[in-house]
Amino acid sequence: MQRFSGKVALVTAGAQGIGEAVARRIAAEGGSVVITDLQQSKIEALAAELNGFAVPLDVTDREQVDAAVAATISRFGQLDVLVNNAGGCIVNSVPEDTTDEDWHRQLDLTLVGAARCIQASLPHLVKSRGNVVTISSVNGIAAFGNIEYATAKAGQIAMTQNFAARYGGLGVRFNVVAPGTIRTPNWDNQPDTLERFKALYPLGRVGESEDVAAAVAFLASPDAAWITGHTLPVEGGVLTGPGLLDLTPSGPFRKDYPTD
Ligand SMILES: NC(=O)c1ccc[n+]([C@@H]2O[C@H](COP(=O)([O-])OP(=O)(O)OC[C@H]3O[C@@H](n4cnc5c(N)ncnc54)[C@H](O)[C@@H]3O)[C@@H](O)[C@H]2O)c1
Image (cartoon, rainbow, N blue to C red; front, side, top):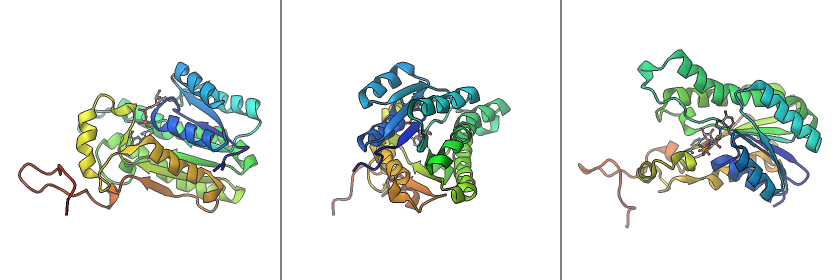
């Protein structure tokens, strides 16, 4: 499939994990990728490999966001797809102790960061009749913990619906992908946690970055030309209910798949 032939996509936080997989997938389908991140050496290496364009970018800095979009336009003359991927769980306090500063930092990275990128990209997306895919999380849909992060992720969904309603008439689409647990460098220090989380997932495994990239590519492509304002969970079924539980005293996590 070459669904992105002649198209230009800007991916935030593209140095590793989900962002890297998205950049690889769009490039594999013929797109030109603008890979942005704080980690300059990693994005330069990836851009060299994918024949893309590396732009260092901190999404919490409006001037840098505006400059990254401007650099994209001077390099390629167009912008067709924005993938808002930057935004992780950066506040780990007990919710009762969360400070105003914690709230501001979490919302600034995950929610306002995505809003900044949309604002800077919009005039160009109107010209190209392009689209935005924002990476939220199952945490933005149901209660899986991390209250500040979850709130920011839910905000991305509401923001997407409102942009979709407002700019649909100008031909710009906005959608969300909401991943469950995905094996990325984010979890490198917690391999045991990833192993235990498998039991929560009806499909019996955690996700891979490529699972998310496939959904992003679908929503960003002409295959989703009449889909806007929606959230596509990519979550191994966890939102349908937990995987089979071990109801013995050693539970609740199951140890094996059912054999009969
Ligand atoms: N991994 C998961 O289990 C999971 C699940 C649901 C949603 N998500 C979401 O997917 C997205 C990517 O997650 P991941 O696990 O692939 O990430 P990761 O933790 O592997 O990488 C995060 C990247 O973000 C970059 N980054 C950090 N702050 C930044 C900033 N201010 N500006 C620009 N870039 C910045 C880092 O340099 C790094 O390359 C995030 O929005 C995350 O919330 C991840």
